[in-house]
Image (cartoon, rainbow, N blue to C red):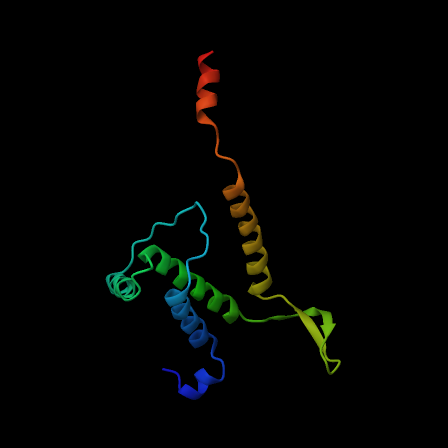
Length: 139
């Protein structure tokens, strides 16, 4: 358990989950992709999810899972270690060199961008016209 002083100093875990709870009270859910991800939860997590769904009746369990996952992924990305490479990419205010990050963060960000583009393109693509294809085959 973290001390209140740590939380007050901007602990990212505390802040992000506090913000998440506030958003559940005040806002509608963000748009979703067409792709689904079926999961089977352990009993304890399923019980906690059911408790949250009861506490926040405006949120479906799937919305809660989605928003909790988003908060966890944000925290995970922030926790990825910076690994200084050999190439200097900039200098800070004192003129000290800033080295490129050769750790997992740049790859994670780039892969996430690629998948975001693909998912965005898939959700914007017109639905295939199956009836038209069926008519063409009959001719």
